[in-house]
Length: 186
Image (cartoon, rainbow, N blue to C red; front, side, top):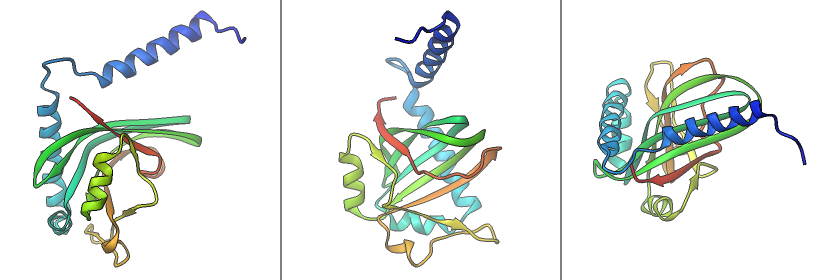
């Protein structure tokens, strides 16, 4: 068995405690109100900065809005954020997004993203799963030179469309690959 120094153990315990403290809200907290306020701000920003996303929202059966994802990496990387699933402009569930990665990476960034569920089946599969990972069934909607987000012809028939926006930081790229969404009780 490998010996672990007191310093390594203390650093690991401190990091774990910090991560767990950031995830809890406690009984009787106003966690859902905070998430809802951030979700509303994020949706308003999205519609004002990228007006064409309003038509995506109108066509979708639900939207998962993640107002702030923070990720960092130096060899090993991770990310976390919380948001709400909205159906008919009402929050019906709350979710956390967790991301882990390993490889040549360095830096940190923050961004927001919205998943537009374009079919009832996609939304039902998402809500029924115990933990859903973004993967092959997610298509990305990109912004063009005019700062308008547009859906290509190939993505207009996709079950889930992802819009990533508001990037800030010094980390290369912003994708949702390897992000796991888990229902939470704020």
